Image (cartoon, rainbow, N blue to C red; front, side):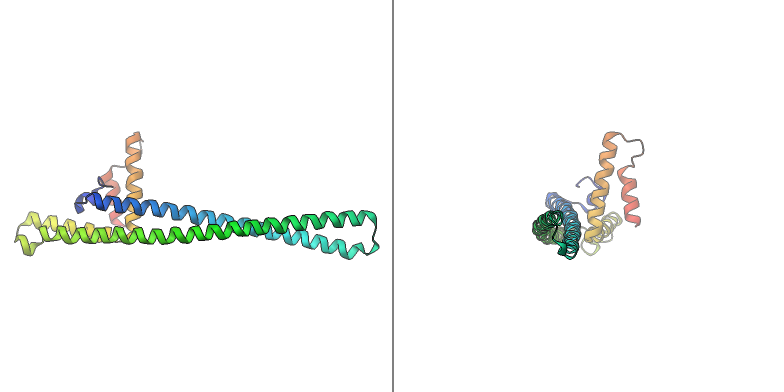
Length: 198
């Protein structure tokens, strides 16, 4: 994170990197929780469908079972056992779904807290750094004005949470591809330029 061109232009330090890293982890945990909740929801729907099927099969046997044959009684008992098992499985899956939804809500809250912490770290660091390089403080020095403009534009980009997460994930993937020697890997500056052009 500290080696990414945007953070270098911003003059980032360890607190900013820690906040951004915590935000990335919270985003990853939220995505895992969301996928788990979706999977549990699909399982619950399948269990409900099986329960309905077992219920209608038992109903069919009850209606046709007025003849009370021995074969029909054993089929009724089997259908009743299948229905009870399906209902028990549905209850178990429903509890798992409720737990997954609760986990997703906790992960969403944590993600929001980490995003807020990272954004406030960017803002506080921007206030400190802008005092050093602001043109009103340093005078008409073109080098300091360019430095201040780079700080301002990188701070503006880093305050947007979605962009910040996408930027750090993409630059981390590019750095890993470069480290592995992947032939199609882009240099960090090229990745930075593509992301900043969005």
